[in-house]
Image (cartoon, rainbow over the protein chains, first blue to last red):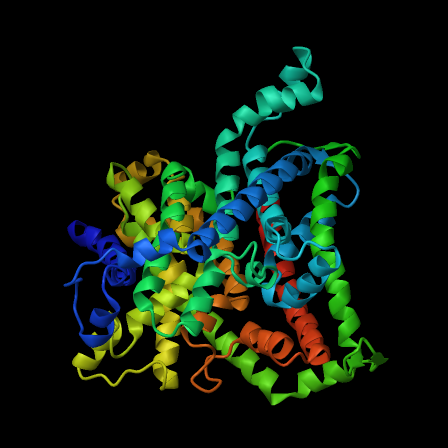
Length: 266
Length: 288
């Protein structure tokens, strides 16, 4: 019984990899092969789909746009969440619990509810179809998440650290930047990872708030799926490329990822 | 745990967060409330309608059906994902080079854009050219998720299990790895069965993270939109039209602003209630 226990995770990972394999293998097939015959791996191996994506600006700009707004969002979210999380983990102030709960409700807010009002709001202030609009809109769920994760990590740092630093003659910001931030560097990495992740995977708001100039890759994909008919190979190649940034950032935080998913509260 | 000091300066620290989130949350929510009580025929002319839209939505069969499908979907995926996630976490290696490999591979589905998840499962399950669809049909099972509601539901649930079980695994694993080795050694000396170890050592340690897992999955599955929209588009017919797909159809598809806004508010209140339950459960755990 114990000996066979490795089978469970192995089978599970196999199950996870199957659809990904199908996507990747399809991205190397020609349209004829996809539609004409059923093959388990590419028979007429081709890079054409990738070449199209890397040479056609409507395609590669999608990736650039997505990466730009995701990066802006991650920086904003973590920067404003740091002092807030510190306040929640160290201070008691009027309404702190209500405020924390209110932040939490925004993490749970369904994007579908906000799509139309967001469109009107960002059009009214002239930010429609800009990267900053999507970055700000994603703050709705990423800031609460970042505050939540960072608060968890900060609460596990003993308060004596703060007090010792003050005794040593540090002012608050000197302590915060020179001592406290390096101490919770892992937590900041995890928070940034989650902001990146949720901004990267979200489509509904990003699509609603952009038309041409800041169009995310995900939206380019949905448009292609409907307008140019059945270019499945191209779609598969575009999909495969969206997996790569996630795989890269996951590699960097692999040792903290389990703790991060527990929101720093294990 | 550290004891907190009374300091109203805390408000200054949280001010940027409050401003940014309020800008994104309060203004749109006010717009929605505004629409929910008015009727419009275009040209920015609005008439006050009171609670008419709320009555209409709450009494409409369409809303009941979407809510029913939503609840069915949420409870089904919870029943599959939570036990499965716990089993996988229990059987995962605790030490050694395979831990990182498992964690990275398992976390991969969580980082794929949601529309790509939908598109990937679409081409994976297509009955004529997809690996899953073709295999099932070759085995003699009549499967076509674009035509049969049952197939569509199976695919939808398989997709969600594929997408999110890893979240449960990672949470449960985080809980398990916080158990000191001494506990296991003590259990071994006492001759405890593996069930006893699970019941009295592992389960209590996982309780907290599993609470997070259940409630996160509950709420996120209530918000699910992109994946089923790309996979089935809510079809065949309306058979996989979940709450948010129905909402977007009403709001952006038909531009029925009033009913859509009323529905948004009802939807949001359900989520708010869930969040409150979540929050009380979480903070109660912290105080103990």
